[in-house]
Image 1 (cartoon, rainbow, N blue to C red):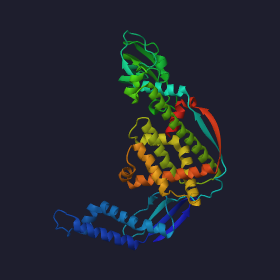
Image 2: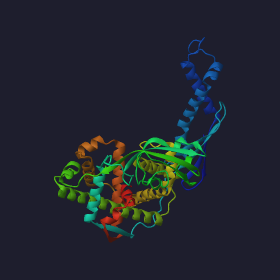
Image 3: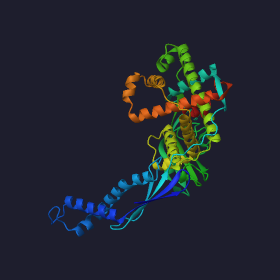
Image 4: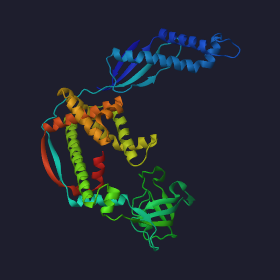
Length: 440
C-alpha cells in the first residue's frame, strides 16, 4: 500500500492511498466466493451458479462489499503510517474500483491545531455589579401577568387595538392571480406584533369584525421568505373575530395561584431572588465573553473548517428550537447557520485555546470540584446527586466534566486578570437583547 501526504495547511492534509492490484483481486475473489455460497439462483443448486451469472446479478453488491472492506482495512493503517490523527472523520474521494487493478482514494484530513500560547494572563476585564430595583420586580410581575392573561370577546363592538387577538382570513394575489402560499384562513394575529407582512399592524389599524381591507406590499430583495423576495403582492384581509386581553389582578390570590407563594409580598421577594440569580449569571456570561474575545485576539490559531461548520449548525439548531421549530430541516439549518458562522469560529478557537491553557497549567477537576458540581446539577433537576450520576450516560458525564473543567480554567484566568467593577441598575436588563444574551 502506497501512502502520500499533501500539505494543504498546518491543520489540513490530503492523503492519497493506493492499494495494490493483488489485494484488490483477493478481495473480489473472496466476495465472489461468499456470494456464491449464499446466493439462490433459480435453476441452479445453491453454491453451483456460474460465476458470470453471479457477476451479472450481484455486481453492484459485490463492488460495495469489496469497497467497504478495502476502506475498513486501509484507512486507519494509512493514517497511522503518517502519524495523522484526524479531529473528525475524514472525507473520502474515491477512485475507480476494478478487479485486478490498483485502487486509489484520497482522504481529506483535518487535524487538531497546535496552539502557541502568547498571552492569557493580565487582561483587564469589566464586571457588571447589578443593583436590584423595585422597577425590575414590577417589570417581571407584569410579565407574569401577561403569561396568565386570558382572551375574551369585548362587551361591545369596537375597533381592534394593540394586544387584541385577531382571527382573520388572508388572501394574496401576484400579478392578478391567487398566490396561496402567502395567505391562509383562520389565521391568528396579536395586534401590534411584527409579522412577515411589513407594516401589517398599520394596515389593520381601526379594523372592525366583519370588515375587509385590501392593500399592496412590495417585498425587499433580501426578504427572509425567499418566495416573496422582490415581489409586489396584493393582500385582502377579512377580520372574523376579535378578543381582548384580560390580565389577572396582582394580589395575594394571584401570588398563590400563579406564583406558588403565600401572598404578594412573598412573591415579590421570590421574584427579586430570581432576578438576582439571573443577573449574576448575566454578569458572569459577559465576563466570559470579554475574556474569550481577548484570548482569541492575543492567541491566533487556525481551526478546522468542518468543526466550525458543525458548531455553527449546532448554534443554528438551538436558535431554531428556541423559536419553536422542534426539528429543524436541512434547508433551515443550512440557511440559518450562516448567521452563526462568525460566533462559531470564535467559540471553536476559544475552546482550543482553553484546552491548551488547561494542559499547560495542569488544571484538573478534583473529587471535591466534581462533588460540588454534581450537587449543583442535582439541585437543578431536584434529584439526589448519587441518583443523578447513575441516570446520566457516559457521554453526558463526559460533556459535563469537560464543561466543569473549562469553568475551572475560566476561574483561573479571572484570578490572573484585573477585574474592574461597574455598577449597573437592573432596569438596564429589561431589553429583549439582554434577555436573549442570558439564554446563550
